[in-house]
Image 1 (cartoon, rainbow, N blue to C red):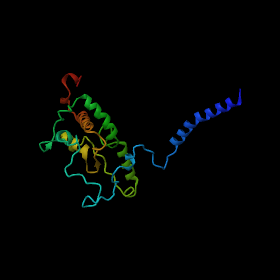
Image 2: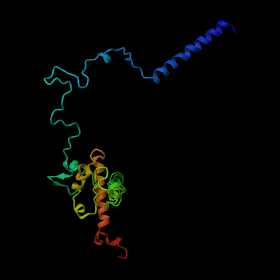
Image 3: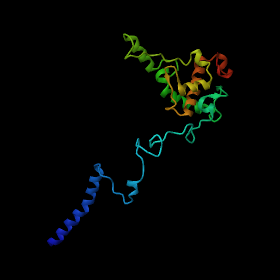
Length: 222
């Protein structure tokens, strides 16, 4: 084969390999230089960076404070029954119409309860969760507060002060917390908080039910 052909093939091969090598190099390392934009408005647009000065406003700030009373679209939460567990200024005694208490809701609540509530309150709701037991053990064996703190035992959900609470009050507690218990508004969606309440009521009924609560045809030999 003539040398000119060999050299030509080698040069063409190198030229074919060069673009992938350059692309791999560019993609593997960050480039401190500004990107090349054919439309320079992307680089040179008029704007104020965060915390920069702006003489247009009397306070000199480019960032404007949120207008008082501003509510994001879809976050007005006008349904106080659904969002706060309150009806006409009183704790709701029933579940919201859009979220009827049924077996599907209760099953969902069981899953959410086991994730978020059982570590302290226990799977049965008796206040014997693993976190609570471990904390009480550490406090009992420590000489004074542990790391400068004390532990308040988790409440049993079968306590008389809890079982008499309407569903709206339980929902409010799950949402905003109470005393040493933190609220779960940011972690658990509204629907799932109601589902947890449904399951808590089922737990209370299962542990504190009387014989008259069992249908006659289900009592067996009792």
